[in-house]
Length: 213
Ligand code: SAH
Image (cartoon, rainbow, N blue to C red; front, side, top):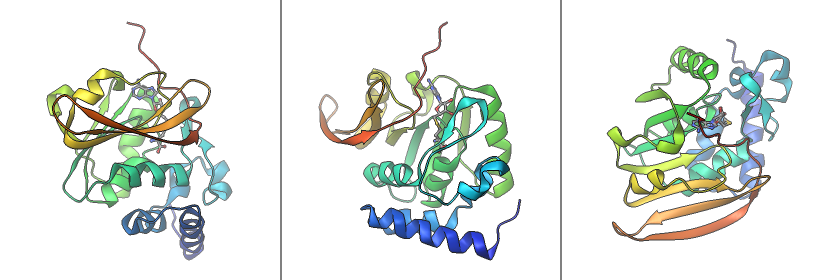
């Protein structure tokens, strides 16, 4: 696991690209500069690690585009010490970004192979999410709720009710909603019974899959 001066140079450039696309949050940009994204990908794709693109990882899944990760994280508007639930651990890149922000991260992954691999890998890199869970993100994580923020990193055909109900008042759910392509949607819980909804542009994610059993 090598991280070189050259990699760091490429990350600084990547942060500039992401900023040029509209990301303003300083902590998010600092995290892009810091996280060794090339180590989150299979070595055959290493040359692509610092392009602003999504790439294949294990188990037919993808590591999200850096801009998308930055955009979703910015929309979550969390601060150090907040409790955040992530659905779709995948490569762990988004998890690492939340850890860089000082957030207490709980992250759920439904693919066993990825769950095991990423758990080991994040520990190796020195990231310490609160909990990595092998399970179904549609249900959220009721035993740890409520959360200051919930971020879904796979395309959801609909908004799972449990995720809305596990938000604190004032908390946000950032979720790409749709089938073929998704609309980035942000729900803010304004009271125990009410939510405000904002919609942003179109994105493309691998699907949030429902368990058959
Ligand atoms: N956050 C990841 C993105 C990975 S792609 C990153 O930064 O790399 C989306 C991930 O969501 C995949 O790993 C996929 O297996 C997972 N996923 C799909 N449906 C899920 C579900 N119902 N519960 C939990 N994870 C799910």
